[in-house]
Image (tube, rainbow, N blue to C red; front, side, top):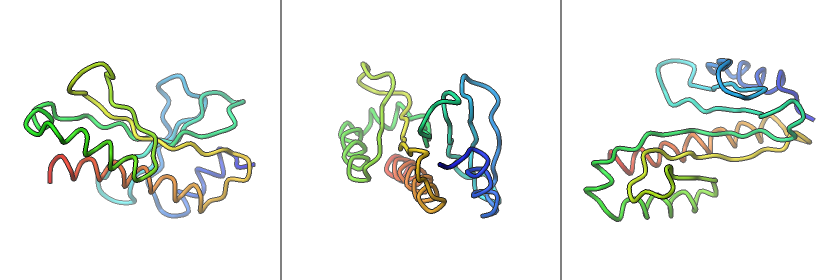
Length: 137
């Protein structure tokens, strides 16, 4: 079973920028960013010490004006995210034009390897970049 310390060490060993997040109601929460510069940060978290899985997630703010200009864009984004096999939720869910999107994958601790975790973090990051590229070109 992977431990929180192992997960941190996997990304530190790669030279990634790993930061511990102390705000929020999570037992374990880190962000992983590129080794240099200000790139997109991916969160890895566990709700409680007994949680048997990690949530790997990115939250993105969405530009209301761009979504209103292109009515089909939201549907395109949803289809792209479905094709990438990531979990996602547009919030608030009951509004025509959402303000944010959360993109995520889950990873069970039992048997989790460094390669699997790296692939999941990369998948979530790439899905977020896809959304940004579709919106901003």
